Length: 358
Image 1 (cartoon, rainbow, N blue to C red):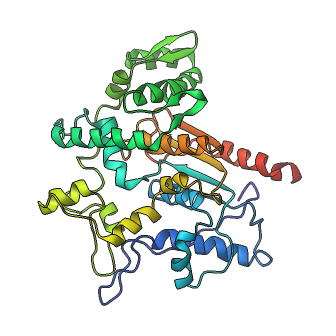
Image 2: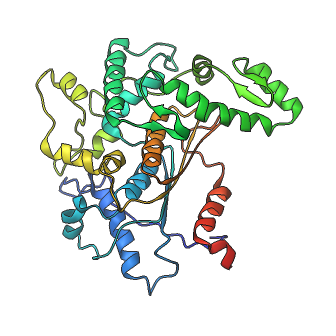
Image 3: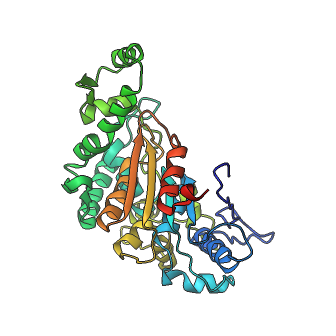
């Protein structure tokens, strides 16, 4: 607001909403449908509300970042048409101009796999390792999923695979982030930091280190295995995929079959639909033409609430579609941190020209 922007905070239905008779009315995809309805409302009232509705920018952290990314990726998708009609949304576009997302907990049906691919060898804070059989199974499944995405890394890195992803993260995100962080310190503070973090080599004004060294810097993981679709369906993500009469349901075959003991169990058809409508990666795969074309993606290098590949896959996919993508990992930052808000505002002002007209 201090920069002349109009701030809109729409209320949306959520996973915990329940009527007095016990009916749940905020399960997926209600949250994203309501955000789309809010965008349509603003556009329908563009001559009554302040601001330029051609320059709508969404932003959020954690689960809010996942919704922000989904709103940006799914703009004007016909897949939501019946849901929007059901709640009486305005007949307007729900595409937005730009998207900011800080540590998005997204791509949920593959999030357990991605988490193990990054943190599988790290102990819990208690010092114990998670079940390594489960972890290995999910890591193998993630390798297959990553192969199916056919993503290419930024700056001409080439095809991303389970074998080269750690190297990709180190060279293109983690080392540049550490270098920027260390370069900004005084000589005295930098010397002290390097003495405490001997896994880093500082030479010629650049930080270098191995993937194993970086994992030692993280130290521990914050979630058990599986991390999101937990076996007893008690996680918030399980609640997201409930329905009107069921508070929480599984959304991966791995956890469903483990929980039920049925090796042939299948996800409910409506869960499969929910999954599709809640995953921004689905709309990248569709090359959805109504998506946001400008992206500000951030997470903390020490975030263990979700794994780095979730946001980096999103960045790689958008980059492959030719979008304007700015993705960065804050060195020693945690979950959903925002350390460069002024830079994001300046970026949007540069794109719109707004900063030059005030």
